[in-house]
Length: 370
Image (cartoon, rainbow, N blue to C red):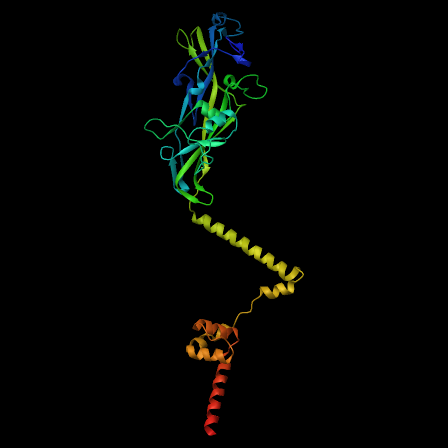
């Protein structure tokens, strides 16, 4: 498995080391569905055909291909490679649509190690993805880089690894015996879209941030066959290129809010039902179970005035209402509504009013006779 060219070095004594070779992005960068694969180690297994297997009438074939050589090399400067991220998100039911070209985003650096602290020490780092305060310590959110005349985001592989808490020269996972540079790994890039913030409501423009997690035990590699002389698959030699590295997979997640009338009705109905249930429970405890339930019952039940006399009182003049209040030793100030309310609270009745009027007339006639 280790291939040819493996050695031990004093600067990295715990893992196998190999010579490094320079490659470009077209060679070690392979697009994947919703992501990209970036190779960090290549093994060139050069094979020749076993001629005894292709002879006419060969009774058996133990192994069709013989391994002639197996050189292995690391990709030089893989951390300096850059990854451009273009993405968009839509929620048709809410009429929401956003894309990286029109929005601004940040990269979340979660760790607190030396590498993370160095990232967060750069200008533009904040402590929150939206309206955060400037900070120079980890954890933080950092600004992406942008190509010239473009608003798309790109990061170096080293920055993405640091945000995921991974160093390629550390053990890939406990017990593997190899470094992450040798084994490879899988990184999940979650792109969190949001258009709402607690206590602020829906924002005018959507934003997003990147959250990266590393699956160290999910090593990743690809294989490719390069045929030698002759037409495949009839060549007598071939090279199997095995490339291990970093698989980056992007996922769109987030928290998108929008007005929904049906949801509003459901929420109101549920809230009112809970409120009614709570009120019924409290009243039941106060009126039937607690020690001072008689007093609580009296306080809970308010006796209102009889509104059957409102029409009769409304037909009277304001001065007549004041006189009626004065005879009943009630306050005479305020508007008509105040006067009528006082009379109703004092159990005013139309019969009593007529009786009072007849009594006044009787006094008037008696005075005249005298």
